[in-house]
Length: 201
Image (tube, rainbow, N blue to C red; front, side):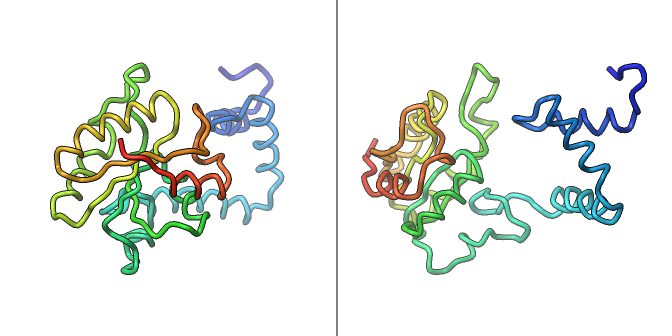
């Protein structure tokens, strides 16, 4: 609710920044004032960048990673090993794994993890899209690179039970990743070791 004496448009702008993850009231106010101090042309470009990103970025039709084209760069790369799919929760995980420079695999982004407590059920994730990729005998291994949280482990086990009956090897990232940690915050060497030492599940 707007407080007496405050400028309505400034209050609305602050509230929008406050909706962002990790942004509190003080930081939101600071960002709002920063935007107000920007030259009008810069502010316009900032606003246009947000709108254009929403309009142009969508899911890759194969792996569900974010892209502004029909296929993401990984799926469009003919030199990628299509026989191994690395399953991750979030598009940012692909970016981090790619940063290792060690992987030449394909990916699949679930856009979340199973969490009944949060109301996230399997049919809300990109699981049917993953299963559709496993029907032509191209894929020989699916690597579960979900986070080592309860939700990530639950998702990995759930997917394993769906995939293994298809005769496809299912592995899990191994040592190096702390329990309860997110892939996004692991360093490149840790991720490379974890991928190399993956275990079958």
